[in-house]
Length: 305
Ligand code: PMP
Image 1 (cartoon, protein in one colour):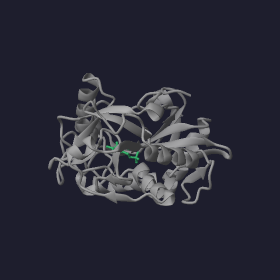
Image 2 (cartoon, helix red, strand yellow):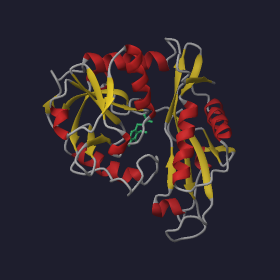
Image 3 (tube, helix red, strand yellow):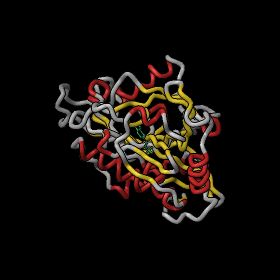
Image 4 (cartoon, rainbow, N blue to C red):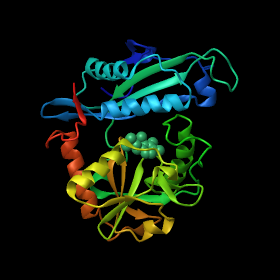
């Protein structure tokens, strides 16, 4: 099933894809008032399994809480709804998009008097950064756009409006011939990619920016912490100056869509020898073995459906 087909869970009911609509005067269309999640369901030897379902749904609820959205469903109901949506669409593997948004009722910035809608859509989404990205790596540029600062737009909420900043960075990067953008925070420290967290490796230690660098606290990022620990590789959170990227031995990106993608150049400067590095590939390999159920799920990350 591709994008544009199948059923969407919409306010507690399954409806046809084309019927999952909202009015153009909905608050979200004008003021970006939505929160959402991204998850993947993978094909495993024991059937399909959703990666970190409960953690993603918990983050969804956190995002809603930050924006004072009273979700009319419990976390458990939302987990069940995700499973139901994947099942009914009969997909072995898919990308899953839960969304909560302010609907149509009252115009004006104050969103509170608009109805809140919740939807879950699924579709088969391949390699986010292109077919060869996982094996060959990607070229990134440091964006001329900074990430939004602390106490402006909350980066720990995964909200629709956040992605205006990401869109500016991504369009510029693609226009300039790069695969992805890296944004610096308002203090000039490395923050993240337009839709990924970033890691760099130097002298066998993995470094990544802390949550205080205006990042989304990625679920894949958290998984990388535990995978690195399982592999006995040191991993630390540090403020990273831009130039640290130019002298890194290896760099990789993490995200639900991008999974674990090596970075082979930053601003046209090769990372290390310009090929995906051994530590990045080790992390990537174990990540894929876990999500495909090829090794023991020791952290309890898979929900079989
Ligand atoms: N940062 C941003 C801005 C993102 O959009 C994403 C993708 N959700 C990530 C980081 C990675 O988060 P996760 O691993 O939870 O997908």
